Length: 64
Image 1 (cartoon, one colour):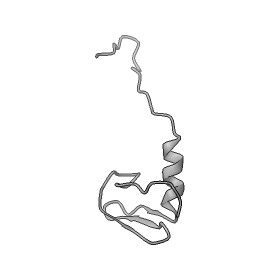
Image 2 (spheres, helix red, strand yellow):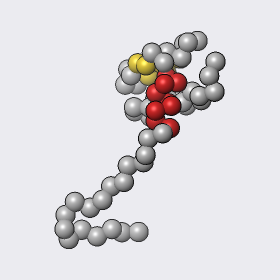
Image 3 (cartoon, helix red, strand yellow):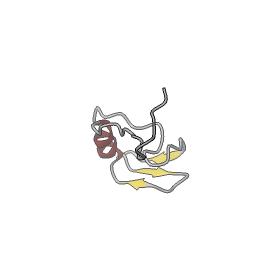
Image 4 (cartoon, rainbow, N blue to C red):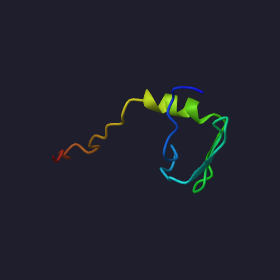
């Protein structure tokens, strides 16, 4: 067993109902996403930088 935590929801749609096998195969009950080893997916998500959205029009302003 690895130290990588198993997600509490689907990494693609965020749904919290899924099937998880003893060898970390993951199947989402909502969108049908299937991963042969969910621990590899959660490791790559953990190290991904957050997405920052910026205005796309020249006259747009950021609101706080």
